[in-house]
Length: 264
Length: 236
Image (cartoon, rainbow over all chains, first blue to last red; front, top):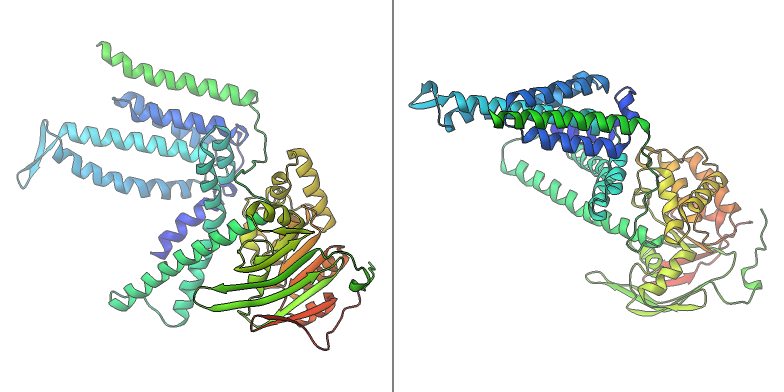
């Protein structure tokens, strides 16, 4: 359990440092956020395989050019695809249509299988685009980009604070966990374990709240009265325009592929 | 640097004055009973006391993070009661927290140091210049784009000090500044603090550290603040 938690925590703070520099890094953060958002919208609402697969192809290209750490990316994609596997197993049985085979009186349908596969393709395409365009920037850059895109201040602050303190809280968790181990605590399925883990998380919660209060005090001491200033100017350059336009053209193509079928 | 080591020589108004201050926690009984205290120009007062004696509470009361049950806090000649009045006081009396992680909440060092000046109404450009200058004065140049949570304990302490000093306070209030610092970082901190012109109120359990800095030592026990007998006084 602790391993899963640790993984999700380290990926936040470290991702920006772990891939090699590429031309994608030079593109303005806002352009990247908007492009990936629109891409997700278009791909998820496509009805057919051609645009979805084209999207996936585009995602592969972006992953390639952003020089992501392949092993790391694969591990994360597999985590989601395991969930998709469940979908593939379930959807054929719940969607009515032409039967493939039947188990215990339940019939699997071609339509269901195709639907599940389509969803899998879409999900992978969106995930990979997010990895290559959004996850390659540091979390604080993402926060600033969102702020410049007029996302509500509160949400941006929430995210920036989370980025800053996730690490501190995970340290605190590990510290307490280690202190438990030092007193010969081993995870078992018994009442004692449940109680202790309950205490652990309860204490973590209390400590986090207390820390939040102290942070708020510290901010007040430096004259904070509700406004938070972001310290950077983002400028749209030539690369950003070129990338943005090219990406939008591609998205228009995907939309076109969807509409085309309507006329048939 | 040399300062006149005679706090009482100037009989002008104290920078911070506390009159009959009392405070009690809901389930712990009273922590402070009728505390009186004055801080004068270029004094460095060390407050000693056991764990849980209420030292931190006293500091938080001074800057208005906790509200006193009874008593007055007069900062720079003005009695502070409301949040607005305390806000003005806090700009002139910089509080350094026990845990640097509480204070450094921005992703990068520069953003964190800039936070204070921006709140005081400086423009972004001015804030950047002031922050860089303060970092330089503390010998922390080159740290501005570092990520705050990846700094070492000593570095974090220096950055928090920078983030307070950049607001140009007249009084520094330090809550166990040597907490979890190694000898080298401690020596560095002492040198920096000794060179600063501000009056200070310091809490520290570190005898050596407080002896080096203190011009006056007080003792907080059973809610009473008393002058320490046979006080060791530093030669500033």
